[in-house]
Length: 325
Ligand SMILES: [Zn+2]
Ligand SMILES: [Zn+2]
Image 1 (tube, protein in one colour):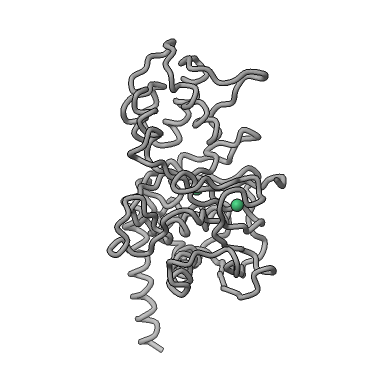
Image 2: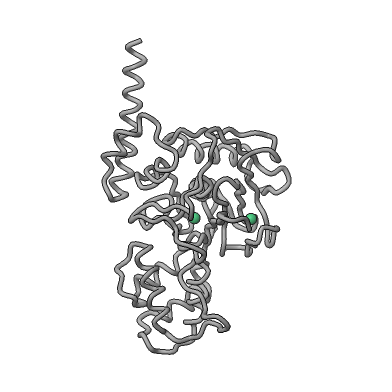
């Protein structure tokens, strides 16, 4: 993998399977105890950058100090009470479907704030007109192509609305900046997909542009017609992964698009102030976002509200402007 290129992935854990149950049985395991399943929990935390095995050893089932440290770090990153314990809230968070990108890079620290995060080195695109294209061969056939394109268009627009970056779809896949495709299993980039559920998608940090979705998932654009309990909203995942394409890592702000967890059958597509401020840190802001983002409160519920207000006022201002000229 290229230096300074990180992958980002949305992963989902099947709620009703032994995977989740395996971690649920660890609730309230005390420090110093040895319980079957702790090693798997360590592997999970290792997968997302919280802990690594000591050289020459494998993870054990012991709840040791290193696990305590990793759990504390996880809790901090997910906006949970930081106590280092496997309490029900922490286990619930771990068993919730989530993005598979490393929350922490074991190769180096992510740029962190209490809110939005970046990849190491804060990579960003150096040109502002980005093209995107869909792979002509790596596709899914059960969703209408025009519906997929419209969903991505809406997802790109949400980001372009906030920052002076434009996204233009191009049929020229090979030369486009952002290359979108659906892939199964090992597809040659060192980040194999894992079939139904598990990892859902991943995107690479700037200026790589690769944006891969797991073709094995039950993607949907309409929960009204798609009844599968494991259905995943394509537009929500697209909006999240575009954030990674732009250079954003995960945020501890739960309501933000760039938060790591995403429940199944959930549509989460509205950028919060946390998302907007992170993107604007890298790219600057569009004029009409600037005033309102400066006044942005810390909580994302309010953030959603502020962005909505900004959009409404922007529309009003545009209307006044058009009326006056
Ligand atoms: Zn992610
Ligand atoms: Zn890939």
